[in-house]
Image 1 (cartoon, rainbow over the protein chains, first blue to last red):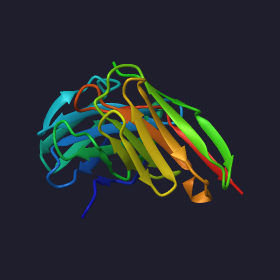
Image 2: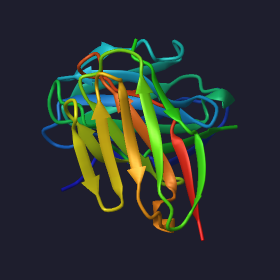
Image 3: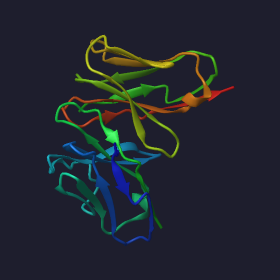
Length: 114
Length: 110
């Protein structure tokens, strides 16, 4: 079984550039979560979707961050413009059903903004 | 909002010893989850505790849940180096999103 797939695995970009992170959840899972992990702040929930609909985006740090889920098998997290403080590991996770929340995490995208 | 606190945050222990990691949470949580993260890797689900009194064991790790005390524990028996990792607990009071603790970094030394 393929797990959660994220791309790219590593991204290095310069301040001001647009960054797009991609996630493919496990087939059949209908909830998807984006997290950010840093040493200073730990694991932070940014946004989550249920059945492709954003449920809570209160964790999105600024308007520079946006996320979409156009279909059940694909989601993007976009940062525009990127800043050095956005450097972190971004994880995507999915769960199989509403109300039972064992989350399965992807490998993460390590983002470095110079 | 559900707050989850773990202690200790850092733990160095010798191989062969036993120890317990504690996870306290602030409000009612329907379930409690434990995850493991190796350095530079993703989070791997270890245990899902569904109800009061639940106990689950996998190898040298045993997790338990006391919903009345709002406490979960992760007990390590006869630690080995392979258990070195960061362990997170998480609760879900809202029915969908998880609230994670800060994690306990465990180092098992010879």
